[in-house]
Structure formats: C-alpha cells, structure tokens
Amino acid sequence: MQFFAVFAVFLAVSAGCAPEKRGALKSKPDTGILVLAHGGDGKWNRYIEDAISGIKGDFKKEIAFGMGDAKTIQLGIDKLESAGVKNIVVVPLFLSSHSEMYRQVEYVLGLREEPDILFWILMGGGGSSEHGGHGAGSDMLEKVKFKVPYRVADPVNYSPLVAGILEERLGKSDFSRPVSVFILAHGPISEEDNKKWERDLGKYARWLSPRFRDAKFFGITFRDDAPSFIRDGAAKKIREAAGLEISKGRKVIAVPFLLASGGREDEIKKILEGLNCEIIEGAILPHSNISAWIERQTKPR
Image: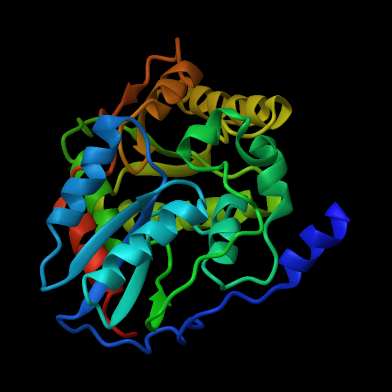
C-alpha cells in the first residue's frame, strides 16, 4: 500500500500556474524576484543578501537558500504573493546548470517531470549527508505551487559580467613573466555534466585571454562533492597540469570560480599545496556585477 501511495503522489500534477515561456513576463513594479542560492554559513549568506540588496528597480525580493528544497522555495513564493506581486521571476543564483542538484531544482519548479534520483541518492536519500543542512531533506517528490504567472531564468553558466569580475581579480596580480592561469570551479559529479561545466569555463578562458596576452588559461573543476575516486582524479589532473606549467618556468595563478567565500577555497589550497602557486583570495562575490546580473534576468529575452 505504501508503494502505491508514493506512486500516486509521484503521478499527481501540482495545482496552480504552469511556468510561462522564457521571456514571457515583463518587468513591472509588481514583479517579484525569488533568488535561489545554495546557502552556507552566516558570512556566505550575507554576500548573497548584499548582492540582492544592490538590485536596482522597484521589485519585491526574497531569497530561498537550499539545494532544491521545496518547502524553503514555497515559503519565498508565498511571501511574494502575500506582498501583492502579479508575477514572479525565479533567478537561480548558481554558477552552472550542469548538475544533479540543478535538475532537482527544475523538478521542484515544475520544469521537469521527474525528480533527479541520482541527486537524492548522493544526498543520502533526503538529508542524511553533509548537505542535509542546506535543505536536502524534504520529500523528493514535492513540488512548489504558484498562484501567479512565473518565469524561471537560467543559472549563470557563462556571463560577460562574471568574466569582468575575474578580469578585475586577475588585474591585481603580477604578469611581468609568463603566467598560466587556472580557473578552478567546484564542478558536478557526473562526467557528462563535467564536460559541459568545463566547456563553459573555456568560454571564460577565451574571454580573458586577449586581455592578458602572454598568459595561458585553463578551466578545470575539482569536483569535491563526488565520490573519492572521481574527486581524487580531478585533484590529480589539476596538480599535474599546474606542475607541468611550473616545470616550463611559468608562474601559476589559481582563480577560485566560486560564488562566495565559505570553505571551498581550502580545497583548492589543499590540491595545490607545495606547488608554490599564487591563489587569488576571495571569490566572485562581493561585486556589483552580480546585482546587475540578477536584475538582467528579470528582463524579457
């Protein structure tokens, strides 16, 4: 009986509004912005809050911290609707859409018919893993409901606004001798997703290359949420590539491609330990370009 009850829930269609086609909503004073972010410690969360405070325009704004947690997202929706908004733009403030976690977010928002089973297995079946504190513990079949029209923007993936932040961070380093720059991102778990993630990192490398003409650029993920055999292989790939550049007499600079500071930088330092690399301090936030990027997602395409 329990199996059939769960199966019935899985087949049930969420009541409420269906998502509009991308670009269908127009920005108006009665537009609400719901920003989705991973969530971290108090300092990490404040970086996100400050970025949202910097958004220009007459919007109602809410944040939902978590990794596809339907209850937290629903709370943000309810607050915006109670404030009288006539439409909602959901902005996933994630650096990439290529992950099991983001596919689960799409399911929760009604953009995907099935939940991402692999994500929930990796999260310990709904909250028993280290990510449980970030909102991975709600029912995997739960979806949110909207009473007003809504649109879901894309995660960052690639943006010239973010590329500009990387350029600014790198501009503080010494390029008086040959330099190799490693853009190091958190990365996904599956190999298929990883290829797409590193493809986007390659776009940043191509954008930055003419601005630092004598530098070489590499975009690599360190995949520290993956099982150890994947994580260790990613770390080895980075160390070997950096070591090779150093053996050629080049200075290696590592740029953390992380949304905000909060612990992942320690993994980068661990991977590069003993190689005498320069590691750029901090992350993409704080920077006004992220406020501008969020605001841009509210505009019809």
